[in-house]
Length: 478
Image (spheres, rainbow, N blue to C red):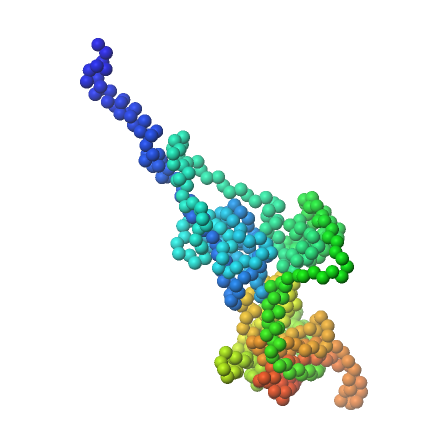
């Protein structure tokens, strides 16, 4: 008789039957399948990275260039993009590790502070961070729903690494150039990604763009140049509307406010020959091997002018103040620090950074700070801190040309001085003979609502004497 008809053999085969039933349950039970994916690596929420406030109440800024693209992996402190406000350019860096999923702006567009800049797929969950917004609609926080119902795999496949950007993409998002150079490239129809810069650190200069545009220099790129843009023909004399750059827009607003200030103009001549001799002696000393501790290797006129202005302000603090018009009755705010601004012609436009607390600095330290600001301005990297808090301004037009000017006062100050070009002129000496003298014109503008003509004339005379007689300046230094 067949053994299946007996009860005992069935019990004897209990283990075999149980194994078969379990194998069928493994194929049919979703609970068992979901357990098989608990060991897989979690994927966290894709969250927007918000553009933080970069200071000075700025609400929008222009995206100059991107250093990343979609699907690019970033780590903490990696550069995302460079933005240009109406005062300075700032590089935005990532605060998280993850993968870029979306760029919300193209280069040249205006980004809004507090709005999403990029979407990042975070490698780790971040809680209650104000720089992260709400996840975009449809973003998934887990991959488990993708695998529910799958019966072909008991372990998930390892995630594929993100694709590496091509060489062309890196060039597109990482070209080093100031906004002014980029504007020239657009005007000339040159793809800046195809130009190799000859400046410091590979930075693209204006000369590189012009050379590439004129000659199509094959040495400027290892790739075939892109097709030339179609020639645009315009009617001679036709007008074209061009939007203001952020720097021009800022200057427009400030100078419009300055129109409400009644300007009082005053000009004076200063003889530079005594200062020239002092400067020459000090520069010879700075070139000696024993002067290795000096922060600069050469002195110009400007550090002496700035320090002399600070010394003169100690006797005439009125010109270091500002008007407070927030109350019904105007008030004058006197400021203890001498933060003297220096107008600079930079590739992005006119900027006026200031040297903080001149009273506590030596002439050599003033020269070092001035040199730092000039180098930063040459590449458009002056920080918002250097641009804020000025109390009086010096505008040196002499290195470009011109002798007399009528500088415009900024609303937060009550005076400004413009310095013209130094020139040698014939003059009568003490013995009546004609001798050459080096002179320069100092042109003042003061707010006539609080500064009277006599005060301005006395202040200008004191500054003139401190420069014409450097010994008087030196004995007043602390």
